Each structure stands twice: as C-alpha cells, then as structure tokens.
Amino acid sequence: HMIWVKKTGFNMTLQGKTIFMSGGSRGIGLEIAKKCASDGANIAIAAKTASPHPKLSGTIYTASKEIESLGGKALPIVCDIRNEEAVDNAIDSCVEKFGGIDICINNASAVSPTPTTLTPMKRYDLMNEVNARGTFMLSQKCHPHLKKAENPHIVNIAPPLDMDKRWFKNHTAYTMAKYGMSMCTLGMAEEFRKDGIAVNSLWPMTSIDTAAVRNILGGDSMAKMSRLPAIMADAMYELITKNANEITGKFLIDEFVLAESGETNFNKYNQPGYNGPLAADFFIPSEWVSKSASNVMEHPGYL
Figure 1 (cartoon, rainbow, N blue to C red):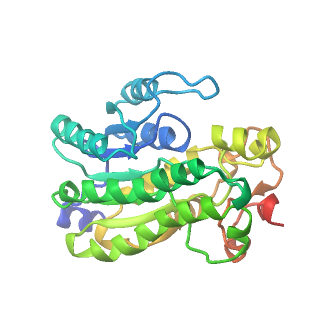
Figure 2 (cartoon, rainbow, N blue to C red):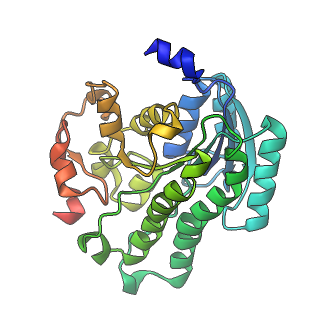
C-alpha cells in the first residue's frame, strides 16, 4: 500500500488543504472542522452566526478559535448562503487567503420537518434556498477552484435518495429540500467526473446530538438515543482523504464508512454511559438499519 502511495504521490493527510464549508459554527459542521484542523487543514467557515444566538452556542468566531487551537488555519466569513453576491465574495476571500479550494462541504441546512398545512411559505423558502439552492450554488462557484486542486472533493451532508412515501408524508417540504441536495450529488458526480472532482453525500445512520435535534426533534429523550457528532467528523475525514478518482456519486453512511475503514468500537460515539437503542436518522432505508452492527432501531417517528 505504501508503494502505491509513493508511486502516485497521493497525499493522505489534510495538511495545507483548504476546505470551504457552509454552516459550521456549531454541530456536525464544527465537529468536522475541528477534526480536519487537527490534521493541519485550512478551513473557511461561511455561516450566518456572527453574534451569539440566545438559544444556540457558537459563532463563526468561536468556531475559528477552536480550529486554530487545534493547529488548523481558519477564515470566518459572515455569509448568508442564500445570497449569490455574498457567496461570490466568500469564495474570493477564501481563495485570496489560502490560494485555492480543495474540498467543498455543503453542511448548512435549515430544518423544519412540518406537515404541508403547517409549513409557512417563508419556512418552505428558507429550507429550499439554504439546502437545495445553497448546495447547488456553492458547488457551482467552487467548481473552477476545485478543478485545479490535486484531490478535489465535494461532500453534501445529505441523505440517500430513498423514494419511500413515508419520508414525504410528514414533512414534504423538508424532504424536497434535503433530496434537492442529494440530487446535486447524483448529477454533479457524473458531470464533474471528467474534472476529477469526487461528489458524494455523507449522512448519519443515527440521529446526531446537535442543537437542531434538541430544539426541533424531541429534546433530551431523542438526544440520548443520538450519537455524538464526532462520528460524522471521523467518517468525513476518511472520505476526503480518499483518492477522488476512486469514490464518487455515492450516498455514504457514517457508520458504514468507518466500519469499512476498520473501526469496530462504535460505543465511543454514544452518549457517555448509554448502551440502549439508538434512533435511526430520517431517510435511512429499513434494510440499511438492519445492516447496522449497532443497536439501531427505526426512527421513532416512522415506526
């Protein structure tokens, strides 16, 4: 294996690589940024939270401090990814500071899993603008820079495209917006294949303990059946250090990515001391739940 690495000169670390990430002031995005920072990555965080939110911890500035304390370089950019001009400026500042972009992570997401009659159009617009349109726009704008990179990856934090009506009936608008991200993976993987850019989705097998889960999806009872965000960070690291020509157009699941890389201890991603059942995340097909080596049950909302 080492001979292969030497022969192709393939760089297996993130040292000096530049990651452009939407969102990232907290939750899964922040955890991914910290993991990559400890491997020496440069990380541009394009997110909206510049001043502390009353209910949510973390701003782009606290995130940047954490990144730098772990050995990475950070560029906090106040950016509403619904705004094309703001995105253009954010990408320009990133390229100006770090010299290019190697990896684009579409992590920003608006979540409102509400039924059609209880989804105000403002919410519908927010989800579709941030999730589907934001992912499309960021990928499009990063493309010319990724094309020049040595091992370019686009990763969407987006689910497998499982066209089962149960994923639509309770929250059609949210599903449309998330599947919009997944469709970007499907289309762009083929479109950008000739440019050597890998485009994949990464999604958690289980619910992940973030502010969104605690605030929107069921508080502490759901949080204890959720894994810690570190599992997504570890899986992301595995993915973006792979050769871009060898993995593209895949809908990857954190646990499966790690199991394939040889990880066997998944308990370390549970809440401390918790050994009960874990809740499968939205959009995980039943046959994938049953392939999990861990104690994962169907998402409580879909039983």
